[in-house]
Image 1 (cartoon, one colour):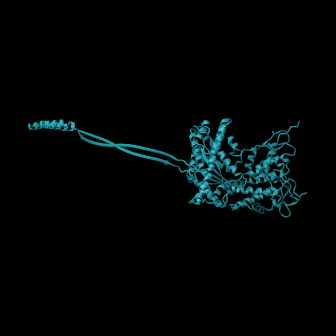
Image 2 (cartoon, rainbow, N blue to C red; image 1 turned 120 degrees about the horizontal axis):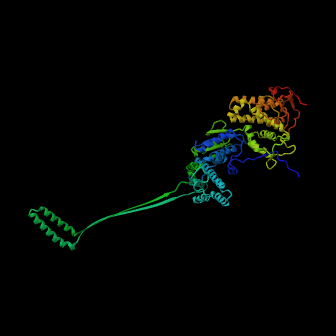
Image 3 (cartoon, rainbow, N blue to C red; image 1 turned 180 degrees about the vertical axis):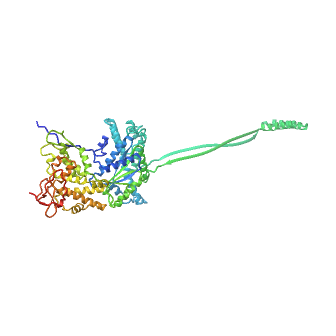
Length: 631
């Protein structure tokens, strides 16, 4: 029975940042780290925590460098670090070409009195913003409900029903029913235990998000009426009427009283006369009837009719209010606007950027991905980042995704050395661009994530051109390791990109089997054809010195091996290097000594000098070494 040998190297394919699998796993994805990613993640953390109100970052870099992946991984890192405090960023992805296209659309003439073009442009932009924000919010809740459902079929069905309902217009009661089924009506579903009693706030935020979405996808009308009627009636009536039946008796009594009173007065009894007169008066009143009735009537009728403005014109008010409401439940919107360099003319792009920021009065976080302005100005961006990976960044990533497929055995196979050789080859082939790197990894995989099989003639050191590839990559790394150059690279990512791009263009000349000029000045001019101008005159001198050092390492026998040995490169790696890569032709040009297939180039030329010992110092200039035809 034949036993299949264990593979030599395996590829552990990483998850994409913020992909559904990454969100379910709840851990950061494996990506290429860089100072740009670290800085962006820190600023997003500060924004989520409320330390800053907003930012507008421009992230630029070469095509295929991995700008989008870097931005999403920075958001993912900030989310991981902020989750324990009951907050996290809410990524809202937008397409710059679609946004700019909304500005280029012809004005609508359907209305009897057309709106100004600028007003229509604002509406179209805000519609795209509202749709993207609603989708991101719904996805955030659905992800948490799916995680909470686990393997419970009933709850998983509820999540599926909720997903369908969110595409329409669910009622508040329907949403509240879902929260109750999951037992999160009090504390909410977004965070585990860091926020308390926010269930009703989550419902309110999602409900308002859906209302805004309904505004841009249909006609939403909400009307509230309240009637009130008050009645108060008061009536007053007075009446005085005689009583004939008692009039005779009262008259007799009155005269009797008058007589008695008069007699009393005649005898000087005036007090008694007054009493008698009063009695007569009372007697007179006794025969009269007096009636008084009061009635007052008041009426008031009030009608309250409230119809909120929920039209497209109201989005300028609804969007910032919604963003602020989302922040109260721990979701801080981060708008990622991709493909800015494909969006069209610069003035349209600038208008789009300015309007997006104005809708939120600079109270939101925007990340724009595109090329930097040609004039070097920020043009409304608060910060600019240029993504330029260094060899050490990509090597650290490869160390995490390329693993030994078998334990180290007591044979002549040094698995770690083979992995190092693969990494050198991948660095050179990819030119430190993520898209190229993933393509190379996919091309090497033989299936089932086997990167290198354990079979005869499949070891990396047996690859035909491995020596030349390692040679060129080591030259690049040794040149970039110069102290003066390293300091300059550390403080300016755009210059770092220019320097690294130049060195990898030299490797492209080797792949194309193109001879290169024999002087540093001419080679620098050749390699910088079509490159953007440098910002400093001193940078050109720095690049010329860099090219001169690269030529020395490429043309002087043993120069690279000696310098790399001092830098700590293992002997198992140095053992695959050819003695030299370039030699001067009689015409003064430089010819490659090994072709891309790993064979000695026809008619190659090589220096006469013997290769130095590993510890010897090599100082000869590449263009001053005498040459002769190699045997």
